[in-house]
Length: 356
Image (cartoon, rainbow, N blue to C red):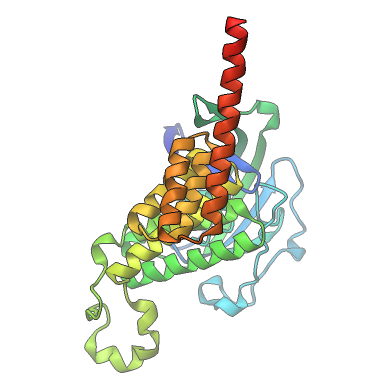
């Protein structure tokens, strides 16, 4: 998930930087791409897009290159590989680079397997290499708000990303509303899988990607029962089985899915201790779906952890209003009361010392 991005050009080079979400937290990524290197692919200035299969190698700078005979060499050109022929990649939890290092791999752009690698590959041509410096950012609280602080240079990691070849893909604006919806639901499902596997950063990344794509569908939703025009009538018989995956969401599906994504993202942020962000996402979810029980509970939790006891009390009482027998609401209200008593007790002790 690219949170911020900056670009600059020096003589012969292009430098891009952004902040990446990884299993170990937030990392600042600084990419230097040599502009003088010519492409080895006839695609010329064509770059990979969403859905492109990319043959990529990522390795730490200074380490020897893997034996070419052991590297991945597809029996078929990458442009004609099917999903079944693409070896699955297991996302690593032990490093900010979630892909195997030193060997050629096939990466599908847009899936969020490795944000750093995908962010580099998006602007590369076949045959190009780029140098990347990764620096960890540490979260800290200041005035009740979260901010990031850059770690020292001794903690930085330098890698090289090389793109050998890739299959055709699409820019986000080239995707139809139905195709975007398919990607949204794919990211949502992947987020759930990652969450259940304990990959909180990966789940947060998937939900964020889904939200970004879903926002672009706001003007392309349809009413309940409204016919779509994306599928031509003469092709209707051939596409009957695929129609559900090609249709854009209804207005109701759009709001419900967006609310669910924000609620799920807030849960990930709670697990990661990002109280301020969790509050923001849970609040957006309750605005989209005021009857959403989980979102109100997560809003209460986030406010509770952030020390906003009045707001936490309000959220838990709203949950209790929606579900009078909710044990979660009752536990939340009890915890608010307990913390208020602790706060009042500490305040009383300080005042007692002042006047003793």
